[in-house]
Image (cartoon, rainbow, N blue to C red; front, top):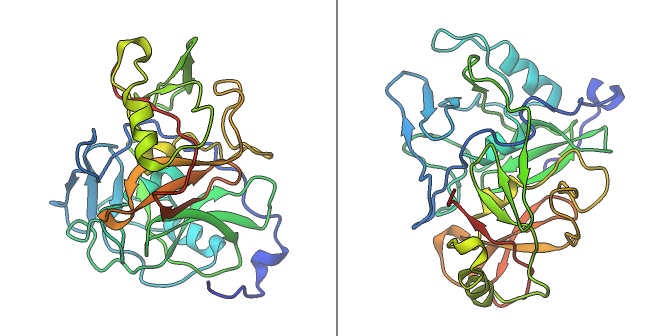
Length: 291
């Protein structure tokens, strides 16, 4: 991890919570086999990448320098590229949407995003309750975490269609399920009542049978859409929509680097994602893409 440096950021009040893109307002792209919303990129316009799933437009080549959080945000705010001047630093969930978890070093589609270093990349999302920290995404392996805003990380800017209005509501809460109005995913409101090994978690979701739909273990990017980065106390999730959620690690269906034997986990006590052996036992919350 890069060492902290003393600069103006250390004396600042820290970043404000990013409410403009705190959750996904589009389907979450996936890179794993057999999952909906497979990643699809349009690189025909020089210098930029259009994500056909999310509608976001990305700076194709990263800035090529390491900057503090404040300088990274300023760099994107001042960027003019492909005829647009409304670029900004992406939020945590936006940056996580271009992770390609079928590979590592870097964990990104290298055809769409060539010359991407296996670095830490800043997001615009502040760490709730930690005024001197913000979220980043590590593209060496592919996970989000928080660190001091005085550190110097890489950056990649993004822009969104200004005519696409933000969602006023996040969830449609039903008796046993919760529909995410942005991603279109429907989540089981309850989780497994005990921890399960990876294969047992897949079997649990496969036989859930709730509302007559086909349920499965979510991918890691899908599971990250449930993290409430603005929550001051764990679990980092909307507790009115998902009551009694334990502050524990949950299984995703995403294998580490596309290899068997290790899978990604999302921790709802602090919102980070890590990978581990699929023989350990964790909770699972099932998901379906069925309407």
